[in-house]
View 1 (tube, rainbow, N blue to C red):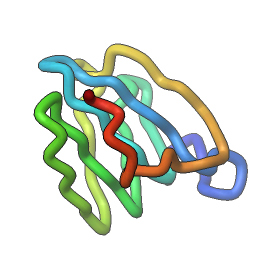
View 2: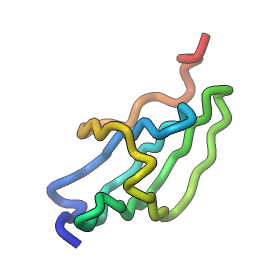
View 3: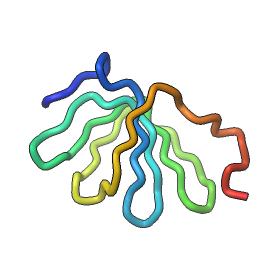
View 4: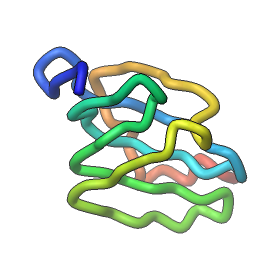
Length: 79
């Protein structure tokens, strides 16, 4: 693994099929497979799923947006 949570706080990851994943990056490998903790998954319909930890296949990640703040998920951003 090549990263840690201290240098990579929160990441927004738009995925194939229009899902977005927000979480703290724990590490990644040469194939950009990523391990995240404190994960929030958001579907295009607005369904929110919270997970303690997640392993993402690098083939499904379309973009990585580093940032230090989690968006306010209470807002109706899909309207």
